[in-house]
Length: 517
Image 1 (spheres, one colour):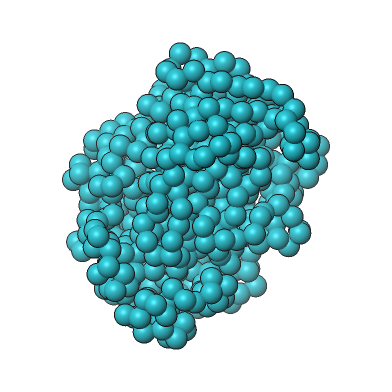
Image 2 (image 1 turned 90 degrees about the vertical axis):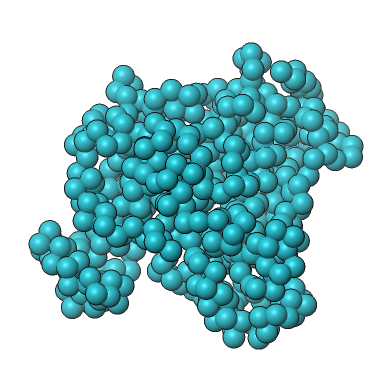
């Protein structure tokens, strides 16, 4: 492999970094980062350039020394929950800019093994409308200390990443539209394949891992022809690949957005002249993920068919997967207990009738039989419908063609018991960022930090063992194959547990979204 040249010295102009500077020689040129204790960090490296509603232009090389000591611009957005909390605290993310396609790399300080360190590339969530790879909760240092090169990155969001217009399809050389954010993700993984050897990483051993819309993105990319071969295995945390709009659906959302924007659908000059801030301000503030207008599109290029169909038929990339969810995904909805539409049977039944159409009464009977409280039925219905069952369904379909392992994450903070093991609760354990805002609120006592530390080690072991190319395991406990009747269960104690999701999701098995489109 290419030898990694590390020059540890204080360089002029880097004193403000407060740490020793470091240079590496990548295939694209020299990159300067800095050392943080026993990890080398490079931030804000451009992997591609973004021009509004065009495919990313990849960055292969640069002139002179590329200074990568601070996070680059985030992509324009209203913000994910964690981004908004960070801004509320007046800290931690740089300004937004449309040319936001940059990434961060964490590298062990030791000499890499023969062939290089295995590589883990994280795709952030945020409902396809918010988030950034530079959020401190995704700091890769602790994973890097386990002997990995860790990469996080930005991709275009909301209308910048997922607006589909017939006029955009007409001008695109490939005839595609609406998947600019997915093309950004492909470009980031391709950059890793080309450049990561310069950082000591093994370009032939790349694991994708992502949460929520990040997991959905990875799952969707399994079925994307332009994405074939960009990673070797994947971890799907709370996200399947059933959310992709048909062109007709995407264009209908575009018509609604055009009314807000004031541009004709075919007037691309008008669309491109709009200030980014105005486009962001006009994005609907939608809390129901199913109604978010900006998601991947079956455009005939990036996505030729529904991803679930491709998984089932063996036309998707057949790579090993490790898939799972939290136990209480939708308890993230903190407004629900005081909202009659979510906490009373009349409200929950009305919601189900709105979403389920002809099969609504059957769904109502199913959740009435399982729960005494309407609020618990709401949490289960929304979590199983949107996150839990699509994740496991994707895993079951993929398991026909490649090894797939399953987990369930059930830890609930004793400081916030009402939130249970909500959506995203595994993230501070995966990254070891339990003391990082805003996750710190769940572990804000020495006792809770101490009690949860062994679980953090077990989770990181499972993720990293899998990223080395083995079956995931926590301690001596291997993860069972999905479909075996067991899951790897994570709580203060961990081990095998009967796969109760299989029975719950069997109810949704006949409802394969997008399967016949």
